[in-house]
Length: 190
Length: 229
Image (cartoon, rainbow over all chains, first blue to last red; front, side, top):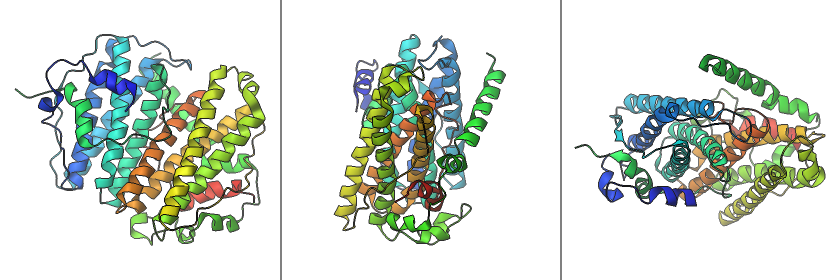
């Protein structure tokens, strides 16, 4: 993973990440479990962008109001939550619910930095999990979501001073690696 | 700006983009009448011609005989993109883009994109060979642009098409997890390219919550007219 990932996954309070990841699947018995894994991440992202209105994010290098674009990103994540929830239900599965989250955001810079982490990790998570999807239509649907996550990631990299496309290939992450990155944001149920 | 106004602006931008940079727009812009179906031969599969946009690919005869054909399909597009950036950037130079008001760094970013496409060509060539296939070669292309602004419009169409093409083809790699994952890691990068080019074009980098998917037949309809030899 890139430097942002490392930077953002270090130094989070709350104990070892692996103790805080109970909500996320680590193995996939079937397509529904893969989709629930994706839904877990989409819930996290959708909740994160609820914070967007708390910060004045300014204007990006291309003249766009960042708050407005980030709002669109958040709407996409919510749409992904709705879609995945519906598909899982249709397949007879039990969609995971949203958790409590602590993103540790304190200002505009940390909001955008965390957004970039979430989007880049999201892309890597889908890329790592795609191989476990057995149904063609579901794989295509997942592809149509991950492409949008990659577009988000490019934008957030650009507004945080990183290359929008740091490498010629994405870095697929295993579920365990994704948990390492995303787990610290999830507040364990008490 | 109010949210409603932004949404209206967003919709307008999407509509404009769909009209101006759509695949049909690209076909017009390319202004090439000679895109014969003979060029399909370079792509290495035939059944795709029978598919229609409305087809549910999962229930149709698969357009690819094996993983090598899927990889060659992707390689065909990557060759096209590689040639587009390599030749276009050499021809237009950094001045072509600074003249549009861009910082010189934009040219460097576009060069990075071109380098990525070249890496994709190398990787996919290796995949095709590893599967016992014959990698398709680079062809001769005519992209139909005349200046840097036109170049960026074509770049948008190519990247958007590339993303949608990988999405449409991924399902044919189910059962070949390593190749599927490799394809996915390219797919995401094409999406990043597409988002960046959109920013340069003043368009929304993520126009929809769900990225459109194109079947191989639809992609060929877009790409074939660009292949002139």
